[in-house]
Image (tube, rainbow, N blue to C red):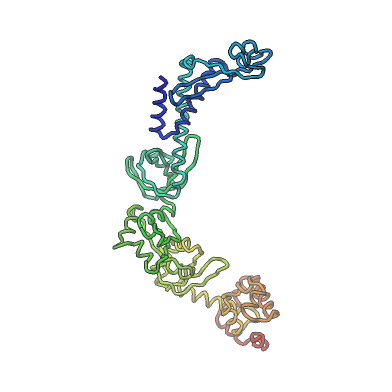
Length: 442
């Protein structure tokens, strides 16, 4: 029986990958629990296991006291010396018990504890195995379709692909193979929960990493990714080797590499964009295939105005704004796309609004425009120091301009519109005040 127990421990440890000491500890705990159930919870029980023989020994310990108040834990000196003639007051004596005496209760308790320990150990092993795989692509088989999501069989455990992490229009059936991105690994009382995703931008990056050797070898780097899962994605790449074209490496011979990824994503369109440290050039690349005429940057607000030819406007914006939306996410700047005709019209209207500021003629309007002020509102919202630095005007003149622009903006809309209603009204103010020319030169 003892050798049989040792064989079972060795086999379970080997088959389940559970530490032998953990199993032995579970058996000892089970027998200790069974002994206390049979003889009472106050007993001081110790259990030992001899690995050589597979024998389990159970000892009950009692303290030597003058007067016994608890027979389960105490013994008189007289009784104790019958067992050990050399014992003294205060010593603790161990009495060997018959482990088989615990009978069915011990066996049942041992089975429950061992099973629980085995489950806990398996959960810990699964968690330890998957906790470091966060961010990887994993393969599995669709086990079942639940309201909570798709349950994926990974072999040793199951994972969940929630509806929120499933790409639109993707359908799966029981028994079908599936690839997904390990989004999160949670430790829970019922076991580790592995959350998968097929919509995360990093899933696309991981697919390129597995498909393009230059990326896995760190020759080509992915520096940005924006996705609208199931529809379209943009990925920004650069090369650390001037001889390696990052876009060509990702596309592959006759498009083989990117097509493999498109097939995996069930037809999702992928734009591969060359990354550039200059936000304007990066945005130009990201808006391709649309042509860009010019870009006006607002670095403080992390925004840019992109001007495109009239016939390129719909291409730059994309269907339902998708192209410019993805480009904006990829670059990390707010992008406002305008046609050349609309931009020219807004420039003209802005210039006329500058001429509408009381005391401003053509010379000052040109100066403000060249300094980057495209409307009276921008002059009203600027501060004195910025206006002086950008235009070179005197403090007195700059302060007067800001005050006049603010008063104009605060005026009823009818008066403001009347001031800039027609080009003729603006042309009537071409001649500046006599002192304006001299102040501009300062």
